[in-house]
Length: 155
Figure 1 (tube, one colour):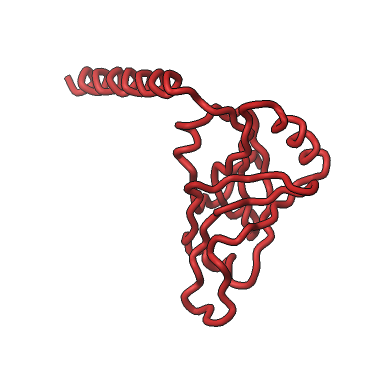
Figure 2: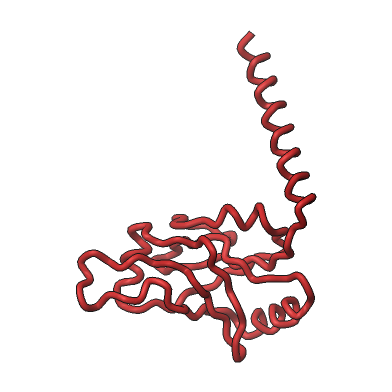
């Protein structure tokens, strides 16, 4: 099964706009109590979240998982720091890569795979303003070509 397959629960579309994604890694998430129920219900948000390596372990910061409605006192803090599960070799390569200037670890999407919640982490390099404008121009040109092609097919 290729990386990123399964029921996609949340996506970080802004990451593709703000960064060049060089490599992706699939990581498991350490969850507490009712968090998996909220994720299965689709009540999570990747906006403004990021990953960081601390003491040889990877953590996901500001990943919002809404409290589960039927969870009462067993609910969790929505923005707590969550540990990500990766192989030691992968973490070591990421430590080396992120020491280079301009590289960041960005969560791209959260999905369910075989009943487990997974996060697709991207090794990303920040885009400059002119890169973003260039991407927008390419998208616009592609849309225009598709529009003209559809009009010709109608005739």
